Length: 356
Ligand SMILES: Nc1ncnc2c1ncn2[C@@H]1O[C@H](COP(=O)(O)OP(=O)(O)OP(=O)(O)O)[C@@H](O)[C@H]1O
Ligand SMILES: [Mg+2]
Image (cartoon, rainbow, N blue to C red; front, side, top):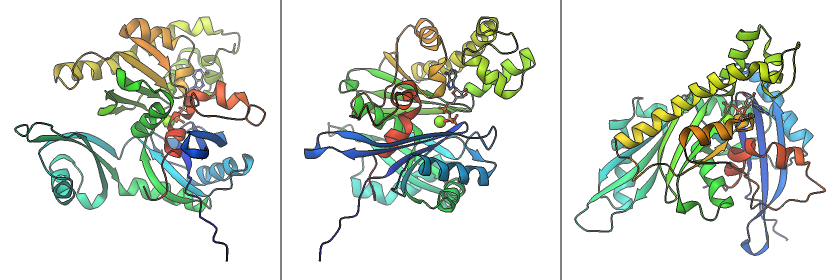
C-alpha cells in the first residue's frame, strides 16, 4: 500500500484586531528556501477583537472560514501567532544550568518572574547566550508565558471554523522568523523590529540575531483613527479613509496632517521610552542601528521618514516576501507588494512546523 506522508506545512495565521492574515508556504526542492503557496487577508468588523481579546466570536469564526474559502486554502492545520494581554515575554538571568537541568527547573524559575499562577499559563523559553568561559556561570533565558484562557478562546474560534490549532507562536518571534528568512545579513545590526498594528505595537530588539528584549504596548493605527474621528467629527470608516490619503467630506489628507503628526509623535515617544530603558539598564551593548517597521501602520504616509528623522537611525519597511518565490501570474501584487508589510507575522508563523 502506498503510504501518503502527511503534510507538515502549517498555515500561518495572524488574527489581529483589524484584520486576519493567512500564509501557507511550500518548501522548494533540495531545501532551497520557500515559495508562496497560499495567501489571504480579510478585515474584521470594528471592535470584534479589542487589544487581542475576542469580543465577537461568531464574527471571527465566520471571517476565518471566509478567509480559507476565498483563497482556496485546503490545509486545515494552523500555526497561530498571539500578542497583547496574556502574552508575557521576559528575559531572566540564571546561574548556569545544563539544558536538562533548565528543563526541570524552568517552572520554578518562571514562578519567580510571572505574576500569574503557573497553572493559568503555558510556558516556553529560549536560551539566549550560553557562557563560553567557565567562570561566567550565568545564562540568559527568554521566558515566554501565554495565559491558557487566551489560548483557549483562540482555539475555540479556530476549531469552530473547522481548523486545527497545531502550534502557538508569539508575534515578536514570528517577526524574527520573517526577518531571518528574508534578510541574510540581519545579524550585522542591532535591530528593533517594530510591528505597528491597529491596537498594538510590538517591539522586538534583536542583537546579533538574538532576541534580547520584547515589549508591547496598546497603541497603534486605531489610536490615530480615533483621534481623526474626534478632530473632524467623522465615523470610523471615514476616518480610516482619510488616514489612507482619501478626501472625506471635503477634508483632505493635508488638513489631517497636523493631527496625524501629533499622533505619530505620541507613538514615537512611546517607542523612545523603550529605547531609553534599554540604554539605562544596559540591556543592549549600544544604540539601535536599524529599525524594521511592519504592520498596517507601516503603510501610513510619511511614517518611515518621521521615524528616520526622529530616531536618527536607518528605517526600513520589512518585506516578508523578499526571499520568498511566488508566481507573478498567480498572486495579486495587492498582497505581495502593496500589503506586504502586513504579512510579517503570518509568514513568520507559517515557517513553524507541526509538532515544533
Ligand atoms: N495605507 C494605510 N495607511 C495608513 N494606515 C493604514 C493603511 N493600511 C492599513 N492601515 C492601518 O493599519 C492598521 C491595521 O494593521 P494590522 O492589520 O497590522 O493590524 P492588526 O494585526 O489587525 O491589529 P493588532 O495587531 O493591533 O491587533 C489599522 O489601524 C489601519 O488603519
Ligand atoms: Mg497585528
